[in-house]
Image (cartoon, rainbow, N blue to C red; front, side, top):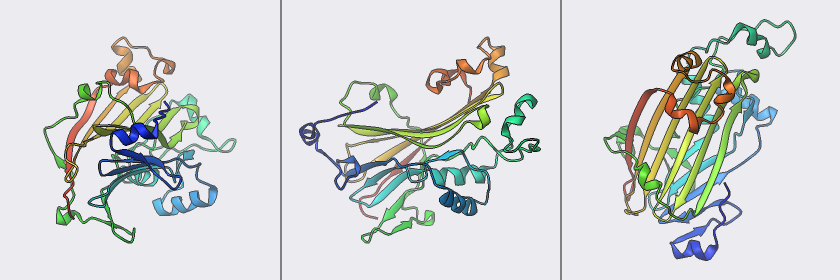
Length: 289
């Protein structure tokens, strides 16, 4: 979906496009930027392998692509990137999903190679966005200590009002970024993306990890974030995470199709997948850190 908004229309709602060739906009004290870059080259890929301590990484990593949301008054920045997501995958270390014996040969890189899937080849990640950071005047990034309690996500009972988001409102900015993707040696799909849209009243994003191991398992991990523009000095952000998954066998037992071709769009089939984890958290950004 491509959104083209006239600059005068942006100005009428207090927004303006970013300059210096950057893609995004500035609105109500927020600077929202997306970066789309090419797949990592081999030398950078080797550096990532060393840093992450693994020789197994997705086929396509868009390592310099990112979504950055910066609150200008406080200097707080929230971002989404592939490296932190893969660090989460490595740390969680889920056991490998069993692959049908007839499909294991597809994972070979050489003829007659023995296939040992002793790692989570699905690249499932618990990542729900990088921790908030403060950018100082010299543009150096320093992590905010959790011990100070200055910035932290707190569990809450509030929920993102999806019905309100469905109300027709002009979309001032929209983008979708692929962070990494792997076709699991033609056995399915592992895909991490983040979408963002900005309206006159708020910004909203969806970080989605989607996994389909054909004939075996489907897994969906969604993180939604919402920030309204009512309080420009001390805004609050709601973060709602929902994990779903089911085996093909369990879905077939409920009368759903077994073939992988019926499960190409996670948005359509998400309600068929049982919830395994759901939580909502809130981040309040103070005026001065």
